[in-house]
Image (cartoon, rainbow, N blue to C red; front, side):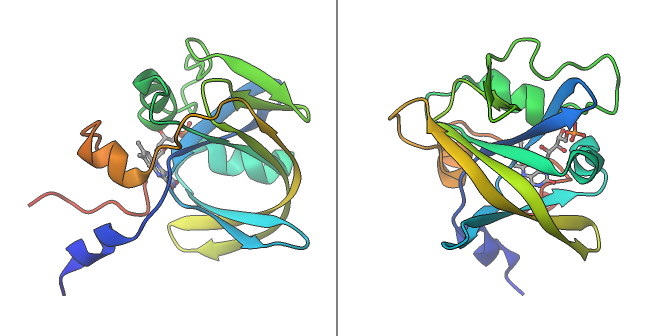
Amino acid sequence: MDATVLYDLSYGVYAITTWDEGRAVGCIANSVMQITASPMTIAVSVNKDNYTNGCILRSEKFAVSILTEQSNPRIIGAFGFQSAADPAVEKFAEVGQKLVNFLPAVADSCGVITCKLIDSHDCGTHTIFIGEVTGAERFSTAAPMTYSYYHRVIKGKSPKNAPTYQPED
Ligand SMILES: Cc1cc2nc3c(=O)[nH]c(=O)nc-3n(C[C@H](O)[C@H](O)[C@H](O)COP(=O)(O)O)c2cc1C
């Protein structure tokens, strides 16, 4: 099997955020897609080892901030390469936050889609969360960051918990 073919699937780069009691938490995910138009629903695949997974289950809501090509790479560092399982980690410590529909969102992004959790599917290592869209707000008209741009231009890596992870030879 040539698993590199899977690299040709197209994605964006998103910050999935929610509340852990009163603490704003979240992770980076490429695995976001719109499922239906009416009602408007979207899905995201979140690793069970990500602290964000249990927080979405408990809060029953999440927000999807769409990163732009100009978004500060520190956002990906903060949300994609450290875990809020460590109580000392504050994901928004150096990342501007906006509150939309009572959910924390990343200000340096195209905008945010807020969701209420309506279903979840156990997929082994990951959970697919399905959210009904409760609102959407635009922050910028900058080009959205694609996963391909993240790899080609930013030279970013995908950590083990990303569903697209493939060990390097
Ligand atoms: C570019 C990129 C894409 C990622 N995509 C996903 C994804 O789709 N699903 C996922 O569960 N983790 C994904 N991750 C990994 C999580 O963002 C990472 O494990 C994060 O540190 C988890 O934080 P948490 O433990 O605070 O939830 C991705 C990371 C990066 C950098």
